[in-house]
Amino acid sequence: MTRVAVVSDTTAYLPTEIVAANQIHLVSLYVNFGTERTERESEIGDFERFYDELRRAEELPTTSQPSLGDFMEVYEPLLADGGGIVSVHLSGGLSGTADAARQAKEALERDGKGGERIRVFDSATACGGLGMVTLATARRALNGGTLDEVEETAHRARESLKMWFAIDTLEYLKRGGRIGAASAWIGSTLKIKPILTVESQMTPVERVRTGKRAFERMVDYARERHESGADGWVVQHIQAHEDAARLTERCHEVFGTDPLFTSEIGPVIGAHVGPGLLGVGGVSSTHFA
Image (cartoon, rainbow, N blue to C red; front, side, top):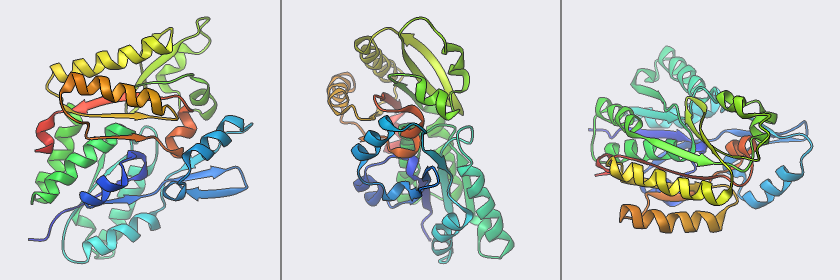
């Protein structure tokens, strides 16, 4: 039986070795630097240089979804041998990526190239959350799951997922127009550290006063995940390497296991939230057996 292939996009920020080991195929989003240039996120290797440029920018870079052609380029070779595809993507509340994937599927179906064997799954999350759902889906595919079974794994992993992140400021979200329900916090007279999640859109969780308190809340959230049995966990950050290392150490004490992965969030999402993000989340470890 031909194995089911799993496709995702670059906003999962999965480490390259995990992508390779789990045979995950990625489609890249884009970063647009005004009228000067447009770059594939997958080709921006120096995150530090990007974030230095972001801090100095008078006008923030914009981001854009993959084209239909980008999806077709990945899908067609995978369909050519008769197999199926489960394509897991960034929340439709933040991006048109999943819609573009569906349009590519429909075009391949019309052209008789096997588009009916593609299942597109809008993860309603981003970054580490998307990474965990994608990884669980890929593991099921590697273990010989059918198209229905692999798709069902994506749904079940997403149902068990919770992911939180603390950011330094709401300013980038405000300037980029992606602030969602957190807009209620704009104009607060308090200097706050917002804690957010993604449930289709950016969704506020709580506000704390200091970076130290935000860090401890991340540890608290890790304990909540552990107590609920969600022991498949990750840590992500933006230009906060030391804090991410400390959080990983604390979470290791909580879970008693290594993380599924730790990684830095790249330019497409980073352009909207800015440097200083620190996040943790988990899903049920049964999805990675």
